[in-house]
Length: 467
Image (tube, rainbow, N blue to C red; front, side, top):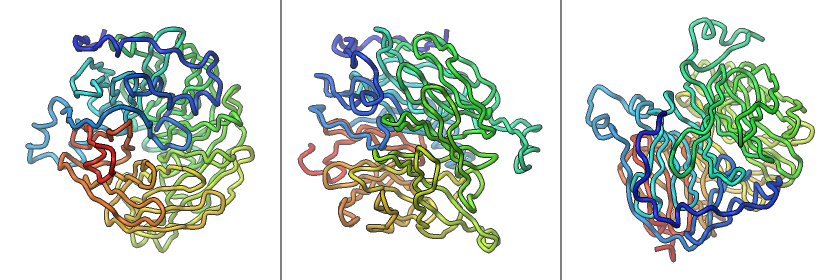
């Protein structure tokens, strides 16, 4: 038993069961997730950033809230002069976007805990210790009449024997040590319902599809687990470990897309059977970038993502290029690729995750420190706006504005059509890496590298009419 704090302040409204679609079809999983309860929060969270396009925005009557939940130990870590920001992040940082369901904010942390926090007041309802780092967005849904939250545990460490094989052509490499597993928890109490252990880390976020959890992980496989029982439905070798590339679904075509490292390729699998449909190795792809980035769907058959590429000349200058590309989900053919620019290779070189809305790709770049809007069908850059700071998480698009969190802690609000900077906000509570922001009603939710889970009124971000 690893539940560390039982809920004592959950209002009855938070404990109600809300019916999902009678059959969890692919379309329902993508669109129905944005249905809000009378509490103003969604009834389910089926994948990374809520939907295949990654625009985690839920229009609702949820009011503007302002609070900060501080992870135990975060204040001491910030005062410790021996610790640098990278170490602090790995100790207490929120590594990825949150899920907001039925009045609770579910947030995983690098300290091994998932926290369930009341969305209106920021008070802790419960926490659970998974005995290893947690880097996946919580997936939340009603499964056979029981509300469950699913998380993946694992770290980025290589055993010595596998580290020796890294970079050796065709050598199998397993990433992650310690406890690597998928957990199912009771979403109201934090009690463990089932656990499925794996050989490699489970850092990427699973996707819920037709009652199954789909994901790739650090042992070179893609998996499907029965969400109700945790039993294995299928397991497919892809000969490449997946680090932070969360499973993304094209629900209409029934295809799951994710990236892998060693070799660096992008993979497409049949979401029902697990059959490997295709794999593609982009030219000049550099290091682990194929397995770090999460892909977005445009709704018209394209998977869109970002990688880093490098030539010999760039290698000599420790530079790399940031490249956006689109892949046909049926065939694996690269439809277009656009080099966004060249710059200093970022540490751990994770690439920025895109958001696709109305045929436009919105993304930052940790290489060029610039925000972009790109035509999803052609790859043409519509506009670009230098922000002079790195960004990796998917932005949110709300009406006529784009909101992008960055490594400095600045949250930029840009004009969606032109890219012009309209507003800048910084709570001085830490920076943001791959964390994607979430908007529910009048509130923006995100977690920082310094262990601060935030609820920020949209009015503080310069978004009018959302006070």
